[in-house]
Every structure is written in structure tokens, then in C-alpha cells.
Amino acid sequence: MESGKHSQKPSESQGRPPRLSVAFLEKVFLDKRGRAAALRGVELFNLKLVRDLCSLGVRVCIFADPSWAETIAGFVPDSGNLRIAQISHRSSGVVSGISAALSLRRIARRGGPFDVLLLGNVANRLVPALWLLRPCRYFTRMALVAHRETSARFLHAIRRMPGRVVAVSEPVAAGFRGKGIAADIAVDYGVMDADRFHPRGEGRSPGAPVRFCVVGALDNAWKGADTALAAFQLLPPDIRGRCELHLLAFRDPRPFMDIPGVTAYTWRDASQIPDFLRGMDAMLVPSRDEAVLRETFSQTAVQGMLTGLPIVHSPVAVLAEKFDSGGGLCARTPEEFAAAMRALASDPALRERLGAEARATALSRYVWDTERFLNRHLAQQP
Image (cartoon, rainbow, N blue to C red):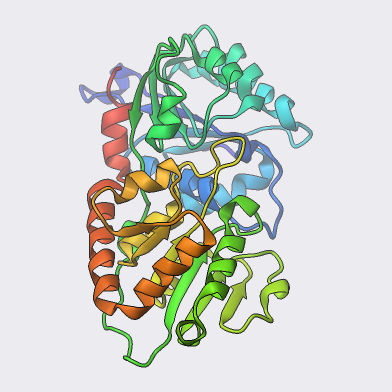
């Protein structure tokens, strides 16, 4: 499926500036998509980014396995600005990236270079593809949205590409700074569709249990669901008896179903998360780093902040930087998490104050604006 031209010649625009043309390359879209696979995290962000760019008049050519065509088109319906360049379904891994690079080169030779090569994330498997795109005769500049740490191999592949690296947090940006790359580096990220996350309209009844939640792909040990469970069980019985712990989500929640006061969930569609959070009173974010930086932004923490929830968080850098103006309590051990939970459970005024501070910070720093991203990082020459 291919629709729309990726570029517009100045003579065709009748005096108007030509539309920006973007080649979008991201490793996830080059893999075969399972029919029942849930869309999560960076996948959803990138689909919405393409949707928004097309609605703003940007001509986007996205390179994807044929199994993604229906999903992509569903996010960007009836858009003359979208072109899906399908990569052979027989390609996989590094080969799929090379196939995408060769397709991009063919399109650029026929229609002229793209204005921007937009890389949706850091990906070592795209390194051979990036070498095929050098020198940069197939696009004018590069833009990378870095959702995670880079590697030396990836840095070397983009080293001479002019443009911009847009990191999701300062710890991610630090891996690009001082490395001699041609692109400049910025930190700019936030929650898309942030207006869906807002506090509930009215308070809970005085006798209602105090609900704590942990949200994320909790099968990953570094998300710290075990810390939250241990903290909940450390609460004094009289406090624990009027609290609940909600864990969203596991592939298989059954191991936790026998703990009184604890509810574990399988994964929910992203559209259900705002209402789920509005049913909570506080959020726990006990993420921990291991050998590498695991938590690079924490969408769920910011979603909780926008909902007006006080946040009990671990001291990892990308979390700590979000609460320098209040809104959260820092905890390192299960005992410290339990102490913070006890304080929040016993003091509704504290929950309200910290929740208001968290929401104010999120609104001022962490709301995504695609038009701002376009004007700051794509449309402007570095």
C-alpha cells in the first residue's frame, strides 16, 4: 500500500513553501505484527506521532512490514500525506533495516531527497541501514527521538548526520553529549493526548479504602512490583486493612490473587488507563535500574501526575527529576515505601497537596505537543 508523494517541488507550490517531507524509520514497524498483539509504549507514541504530523500537513513515508499496514492506516485514516512503503515480509532483523534503507534510496532517487530522516528510536539493528544512507544525499537532515540509551555503534553510525537528537530525558541525552556527533541535542518529551488524564470530578467517600496502584509491564522485574507487594505487606494491620494495592499489568496475574487487599490485572487497552487512574488515590513507581538505564522517562508516572495522584517513587534519575518541585515522596527500600504509603493513607490533605503539585509539574513540563516538536526539531535547520 502506498499513497501520496513524499515531496513537492517549489514550482508545484505556486509560491507557497513546499511541504515538509519526512522518511520515518523505526525497527518495530519492520517486524511482523501479530494479529492479537497489544500496542504499547513507544509503538503507540510513534503511531500517534505519524498521525499528528500528517494532520499538520507533513508528508510522511513510513517503512513497515505489510502486517502493519492496516494498523498504521487505521491511525491515519484517509490521509493524502501518508505513504506506507512496505518491506518484504521475508526480511527480518538487520535485513529488514537494510531493505528499508534500499527502499528509501529508491524513493529519494525518483522524487528527490526527503527533508528529514526521522528515526523513531535508538536501534542497533538499524546500524547497517544507517551506513547505507550515508552520505546524506537521500535526506537533508536527521532527527532522532531517543527513548533509551544509545550504544557506541549507533553513535558512530549517526556521527556525521546533521540534525537533532531529541532525548526523552536528561539521563538519555547525557549519552549523546560530548561525543562529537554532528547533530545537536535537546530534551523534549511528554504524554500524548494528555487532556484525557485529569483528576476525578468528586472525592471518594470518607470510608472508602485508600487505593494504591503500580502501572506498567510488571512482568519486567525492574518495574519493582515485588517491592510494592513487600511494602504493602509491611503496613501495620490496621492501616493495611483500609488500603488496597492494584497492580496493572501482568501476562498472568494468578500468583498474586491470594494476597488480601491486592488485585492484579492482565494488560488493558490504553484507552482504559485514564479511568483506571481516576479510581486510584496514589501511585507507586518502584522502578530500579540494573546494568543499564531501564526507566528512561516513565509515561505511567506522568500519567499519574496528570491525574492528580501523589507519587511514591524510587530515586532513579528520570523519576527524581520530575519531583524537584514537589508532588512525590522518594523511597528506596520496601520499608521506606511502606512508611510513605502509611503517611498517605493516614492524611487525605497530604494526598491532595502532593497530587496538586504533581499535576502542576506535569502540565508545565511533560505534555507532548506535536506542532511544537515539528517547529522546534523538524522544520528548523540545526
